[in-house]
Length: 105
Image (cartoon, rainbow, N blue to C red; front, side):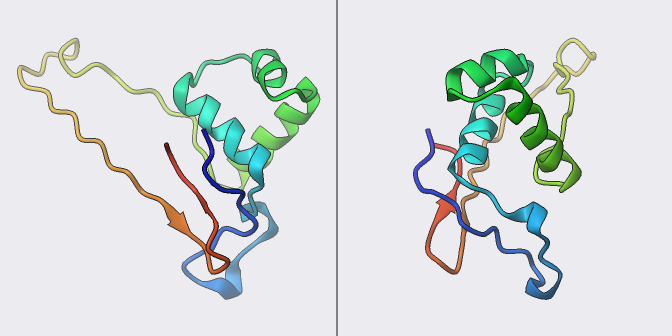
């Protein structure tokens, strides 16, 4: 699921880059699982990644508090009364100075 290991996530202003923006392979795999199923329980994530549930909770808190991920609800536009709905998939890959990347596959 993860193409490359991420060593350091660039921010727009490198002077304000914080340690909460540093991602490793495990962070990318956790994010990938949540992108597949945003409601996946922590114990299921822990089992899939071969780590403890505590580690999952701690990493998720760091990623949320650092603004790397957000928990959001996505509504069905048809159920909300819209007659036309579109779907646009945007693929964005963050390239780092080191040449590593963490992105969707």
